[in-house]
Image (cartoon, rainbow, N blue to C red; front, side):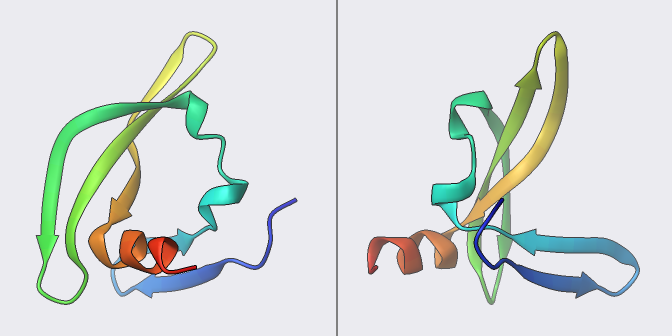
Length: 73
């Protein structure tokens, strides 16, 4: 069970969910080379997730603004 998360509708995109990092099993993450930039949220780094033998490319993103918030808590 996770602590409260925030959802963000993306217009024509699937909704995005923002989860507290403490509730994410980051040991399943593998760094991706993908990077994107948003003028509002900054640069996002992407992570692929491997569960068993199944990989999910660029499944998670960590945005600069979110990292800054986490660093200040």
